[in-house]
Length: 254
Picture 1 (tube, rainbow, N blue to C red):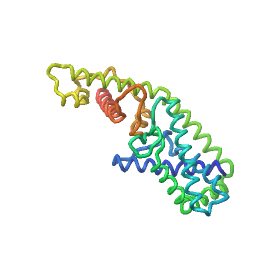
Picture 2 (cartoon, rainbow, N blue to C red):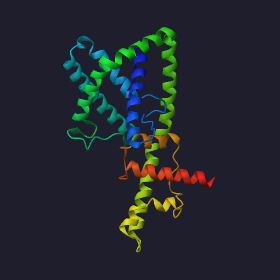
Picture 3 (cartoon, rainbow, N blue to C red):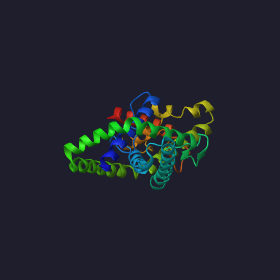
Picture 4 (cartoon, rainbow, N blue to C red):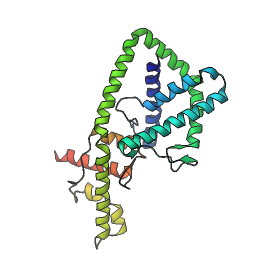
């Protein structure tokens, strides 16, 4: 049963995150780490919270503080582990007041507390009915199928992410070199250095030094707009812009 709750809330979290990013970008964006419609940290967080608050689930104040603290701890550890293994900061709260190393922030934690109250009182009864219905229809088979699909998706994503940090760093280095080249040209102006992307759009630079990113790697760039890659000061927005330009040019050249 807990396995089904994990996937249910991983899906709910994916809807929330992807919907939020999509509204900001004004186009649909899969904001999950995986390819499928699931964000595991939401699943882990919610089953941990649901298990912990059982003794006092009717005490709203206790639920609020317990959930805010637990989810904040999970978020901090997840951020740290992903940075250690994948050499990138996947989200950054450095500009949010009262943050801790940019991984968590008090206003965000307060939001999680309120969010869990809404989930426990409004959403969980609906999710619970859906989970019980699924369990009654498919039993343990449904959970096994979801676990197999999840394992395949995780392995496929991991295989692509292992080279993601190095490839995006190389693109960042290419961008910085191009900016420096434009600054050093005798006829260059500050404005031309800012418009470095035009040299790739117009074909002035062939872009042969720009690594080719696959679908998963490009999706991660779009899905994590605040991504910070180790080893380069180039923003994820600029790396994404160049990757998209090169994708269009290579498609046109075929």
